[in-house]
Image 1 (cartoon, helix red, strand yellow):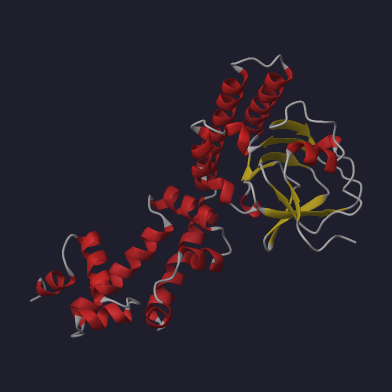
Image 2 (cartoon, rainbow, N blue to C red; image 1 turned 30 degrees about the horizontal axis):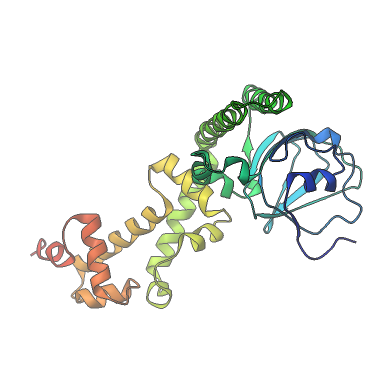
Length: 304
């Protein structure tokens, strides 16, 4: 029976031991073949927490990976990203059948390098598992080649250039992944625009109800959860489609409703601010002017 508490794995060596893999050839960077993992742990924990980055290219698995309340079945080849501290679980038969490669990177390997901060800016490390990146055969080969280059480098004699070469390969992998995700947003236009339509309806319903006055402006987290997406994935998709983030879409809807109230009602600026979820009209006026370059009062006076 699986343990109920998340099992934290702090080092790459500990992970190799947990998955019954040979000892890692480098303590802070490791590449392994999924085919080398034949079985799940006898007492597989209900969930795992890894204290290092994981980039996994996986296909043809007879196991299901869970992240939060979502699950992903790896019947197709996908690339997924986990940052340190994310909770996930794997469910399946004791005997595993899967293929692919995984790259493990401990944050200490990146210490005191520009990539240590830059890697945190790649939003796809915050995407949920079901938002994994689907690769074409050509893209998959490119990713595998980079992962193999990393493996070959740390298997060679380590010298003063080794870390720089490996980090350059990691950066190349991350840049390609950014490109491929952008391609995925574009090629999946129907589903992407469906999400955009659902977002617009969600915002319209929210702003047309009394939710604003009761709860204030909807948060990005609330919007993403309602759409069953992670906040980072939603913003990435919206930026690809519209050039604007989720927060900008929320503010655009707010300004749209504010203009409507300013032009067709006699409510005071303070009353409008309250109806739009602001405790203080000054905050509303500041945001309105930032977005339109004029104050709410100046906008109203333009109709007189």
